[in-house]
Amino acid sequence: MSGYRWVLSVLAVGSLLLLGPGLSAQQSRPDDEIIKLVDDVYLYRHQFHQAIFITTPKGVIVTDPISSDAATWLKAKIKTLTDQPVRYVIYSHHHDDHITGGSVFADQATFISHAAAREKILHAADPKTPVPDLTFTDRMSIDLGGKHVELIYTGKNHSDNSLVVLLPQDKLLFAVDFIPVETVAYRTMQSDYPDDWIESLKRIEQLDFETLVPGHGKIGKKEHVRQFRGYLEDLRSAVEEQVRKGASMEEAKKAVHLSKYEQWQRYADWFPENVEGMYRYLSQQRKDNR
Ligand SMILES: [Zn+2]
Image (cartoon, rainbow, N blue to C red; front, side, top):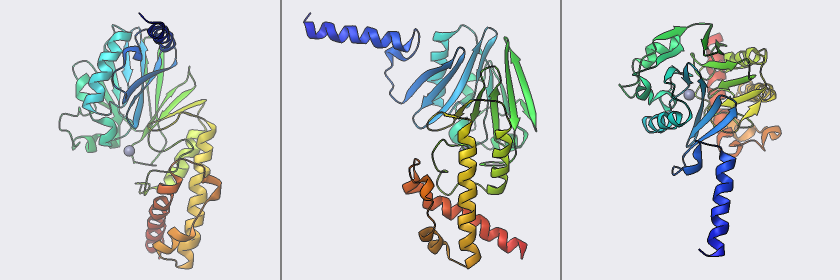
């Protein structure tokens, strides 16, 4: 063995230790990764999507399965961490890009969503997608193997059925598609409820947590919730000024800039679309109020 190869194998052992036992050391799928957040709470990422799972001595709690492929991989990975079965799968909201793949866990798990998601999930893109067994409207908790998990609905935002997963012991919150961290909203915001969205963020700000795990992008802190609410409020007032002046959508898209957020991710490509989404919402509201 050459000295060069020896150096390489020492490096390999080093990274194995860093990754910890049973994790992505022998990873052959760059699109997927598992990151330990705290003791028994893990983030799993598949391409651009991510979610969390929690291991307990009485079973595992999984959130969005993401896709059949991702969920199959995840199920195998969970087996390397614990002998316990997946007892619960929690859907963050009804969108297919987050809930597909749940059938992988259907033999053992109870599926949970917000009540308003259930009807929509009946018509999911993949007909194999398990329909929620349990739903709630305001708040629900799960106690499993000493772990306390709160599911909370804070009103309409990105959808009309987005729940958040709060882990009080870990002061961690998982929230999907409506609190991006230092990133503008997705494209035209894909929301019929920007005003409710702002109110929903105020309710999130009242919750007790420190770490914010979104469904896409970087992990943040509670402070990022207030920052993103500030962004939506600033966007709303800048676009409202254009609507009041009678500007067309194209004029508004040219006129509105929020330099405070220029450094945020996707500002260059998605910000004009955020303006478009807000413009459509506010001009519709104006028509309705006439
Ligand atoms: Zn969504």
